[in-house]
Amino acid sequence: MQSIIPDYLTEVLEAVHPDTSGELAAYIPELAAADPDRLGAAFAMVDGEVYGSGDIDTEFTIQSISKPFVYALALADRGFDPVIAKVGVEPSGEAFNEISLESDTGRPRNPMINAGAITVHSLAGAEGLNATERVERVVDGLSAFAGRRLRTDEAVYASEMRHAHRNLAIAHMLRSHDILVEDARAVVDGYTRQCSVLVSTRDLAMMAATLANRGTNPLSGEQVVPEPVVRQVLSVMFSCGMYDAAGDWGTQVGIPAKSGVAGGLIGALPGQIGIATFSPRLDSHGNSVRGVSLFERFSSDMGLHVMEVPATARAALRTNHVLGSGPDALRVLQLQGGIGFAGAERVIREAVNTSYPETRVALDLTRVHSIDDVARRMLLEIARRLTLDGHEVHLVDPESIMPDPDPGDGGRVTVVDSLDEASGSRTPPTPAARRRSGSASPARPA
Ligand code: GLU
Image (cartoon, rainbow, N blue to C red):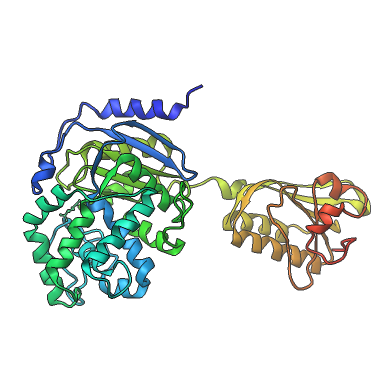
């Protein structure tokens, strides 16, 4: 049986195909010569599965889509403070190549406009690299995001460099404010090489999936940049990634994104998917016309808006019931799904607001598929408090969702594999359960 996703992608590509509005980027002669009819879209899941339709293996230059990735490299290589001291994180509301800086500090407003990206290029790699070594660091880093060796397009680089007057003007202005501390032309040269790195739509989807996957490339398994860097980069992409159309994009599509003037467009949805599209004709903001339409469809068809409210919190507590009676009665709080802060809060509220005459309480995790660190700590703390209140606490955890549970000072939990085991008579737990127990005592007095 064939997966439904390539069919879906083909269907949406056909729907946007007739739209030939927009113009090729004319300010770089090589880009103006591109085939305007190319069209492709790819999804890369965070486990490395790729789906695609159309021209997903055609190479084109990455252009501004390099900006978030090189920002990530600079943050990883130099640390947050030196980078933030030189480049802000506020949306500018201006065109990508506007010659403007923050009036008080002289900093570029964000790393997604050219002034910011030129500065960020100068911060990639360790301090003291020369211009060539820095370009190598940048191409190596972009390659690590893609999971394969990338190269630059010398013709596009040379073509852009011949007409780079505006970027040179920006760089000289940055140099005059000491935001750039090196030769302005050399930095623009390196930045232009960065923009001329060749990628396919498939590569871009994988690069976006690396961001969606907390900085680890799903195919190579390489942790390209640390997690806090990814959070910073995705946040800036969300507020500043779509040139001066970032507000419309944030409300309508709601996926952290970045576009480039060669027609590429990426989106990264944390924990789920990296998306890339390619169609060279651009709207007046410089964003790919059919790329924007495709993303609007993806977002609404698949509910991908990051502000889409998840149902998990309310559903975290499946039941609160009692098994058996008399002294052996067992109070069962049955949890389900993925448990985060709000889910754990719901369970805790239930535990706090209900007075339990039963001595024995079970937190049943049989239907829980994941639990994050804060929820784990909250549930262990409530287990500890239940112990201190005189309850015997069982953790029903056949899949070891909470390995080595340790409720801390005065708390004890008995780990069992099933509710039957917990609700049965007060028999000692199985040896396996005993090993996983948070209690030191074999018979598990909790
Ligand atoms: N190389 C291009 C420039 O700096 C990138 C622009 C873009 O893709 O937005 O003008």
